[in-house]
Image (cartoon, rainbow over all chains, first blue to last red; front, top):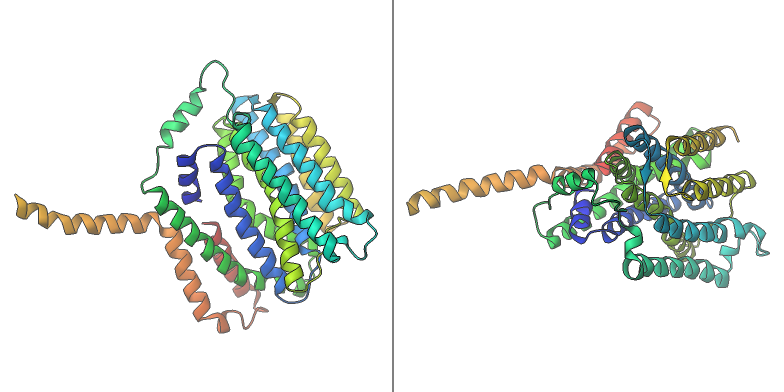
Amino acid sequence: MRHADAIAARLGEPYGTLVLTLSVIVIEVSLIASVMLNGDNNPTLARDTMFATLMIVLNFMVGLALVIGALRHFEQSYNLGGARAYLSVIAALVVFTLILPNYMLTEPDPSQAPAQTLLFVAIPLLFYAVFIFFQTARHRALFDEPISGGTPKSTRREAAHHAPAEGSLAFHVMMLVITLIVAVMLAKFLAVIVDFGLEDLNLPDEFGGLLVAILVLAPEGLSAFRAALKNRLQHAVNVCLGSALATIGLTVPAVLIIGYVTVREVHLGLAPVETVFMLLTLFVSGLTFGGARTNVLQGIVHLALFIVFVALIFSP
Amino acid sequence: MSKRRTARRPRAAKRDLRSTLAAEAPVVTGIATLVIVYALQQSLFSDLHNYPLTLLLFLWLFGTMLW
């Protein structure tokens, strides 16, 4: 986290958020792969993890960031164009990868047919690549903090506070790689305990997905909440929506490839209740990020949705 | 003058190493955890039905990963 932040500070937005997101995705994929390859096959684990990640990001992280930001600053502004760009890609990818498989004719899941696996690997990657080009080259300004009447005070203070950390860029990149390798190797051991817990305590499979998602998203969540407190809502939006997009755009292809290589079934289509919940979340997110300013009510609505999501895991 | 300088260098280097280690405590702890878990995996994971121990192990690994 410290090294990802140091690299982010040197590269600036949106590259900084991108480094943080990609680091988190490496850990997420390794955790899913470890649990997938450990013990009995759990074909819905990847889907459950992605669904839980989206619920945590789009409802819990966005909701809490908006509430704590609103309590401190009353109303907050962000770059509308950037949030809309994120949401349009997220919505398309969510429907394509997590809802559409239920309505295709291949049994038990389209991702089991090699040609369609290729499609489900290629399309999210393509979407993600196009978005990254859009974000880092053509429309970079859409993902910067909005400036109205000069740089906000808090941002200036923040910039001073975030003086470049010691050490060269190469040092931080090397340390980040070492940290990720350690985290990935530890994930293998953690997966043994998670798998044991799910099987021995008869916990719902969805709970495994939620656990993996919490493990993966904790650092990003903290980063988003800190940014909201400091009135840097755009950074919080970049972190939250960027994670949601990377989860779909990168995790789906990675998990499908792992499943194909290791001959493990991977089911992508969400259950009917989850589908309704996913569509409701996308709809509410569209409304939240439909205006230029956010307030406490929008945050509370997202948090309420998250509470219902957790309740549904234990009482479907 | 030059003698004093050379005497100060090792002390400064030691301080640098100490401050670097302190700054990199999460990575150092992660590597140490990894070594310990690899070395003792037979005994650590042999009785997962011992719930308090398993919970402790989970929190240790979870905490290290988050840090």
